[in-house]
Length: 359
Image (cartoon, rainbow, N blue to C red; front, side):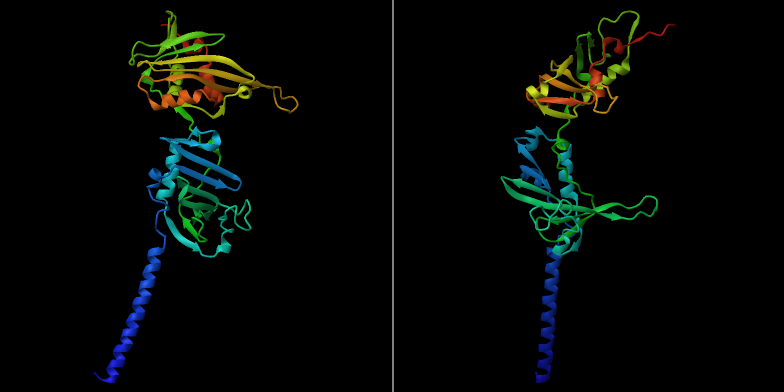
């Protein structure tokens, strides 16, 4: 081979080598990029035993105790399962849409600093989310401010259209198209529906108060629940009975407070309710009321009433876990109710009746 041809071959080999090197680097960069990936793997649901959410000076810990998730900052009150599932779905289904910035000086602009980083303030810090197992971090991220998109309708203004995030503590800003928000108020994580009793399971409901004592009952699940000992001139108000059954189908609370002398101070017993199911399960509770004088505003003399449920027993003949959990919670907690909920359980017998229409 001539010297000229050797030089040509050598030049071609150099060009090929450079091309291969550049292609390899490009492939490596593409493979390392998290753009398009989910924030976290679905395995987090099975491998995590603690979730930590932190924003400025507020931190909340959700911990797995056996099969139950509880809120450390709420004296181990049970977590709302649906909200936990929603959190897991957010981090395992949301995908990184784009790399926004590699400039660490821009973290503050996107509200993505952590509280321990220099120059962090309440306005520049994000919400840190971490999943742990035996104290080891399996996954962490920081959620910052939302991206806003202008609406085509000038009267509607802009709307949130994605969230700027950091993966772990990497000084890189990414964008996800979902509007992510991680709650740090422990009350917002509480399980609020404590018991669900299907209406066909309810055999009887007994009401006892200083002014009234009566029983709603039926012989079988196909019959209608109605006041016992109806006279010939009395007729059941089915709408009022249905409201009782609806409340039992979703026995819901507004908040919970540990039982102690202070929490029970000033509470007055208004009614005691005993619910019996056809299988022998029973749920007994009291409605307590706390009455406070009107506000500081002159002329505001209206009393304020706050209602609570005190669970006495919740016993299931089938060993249903939710009944047992409620029975255990009732030994430690008072449950605050909305006024309209309490009023359902404070109705006298006459409110469950209506006059028969004369022919």
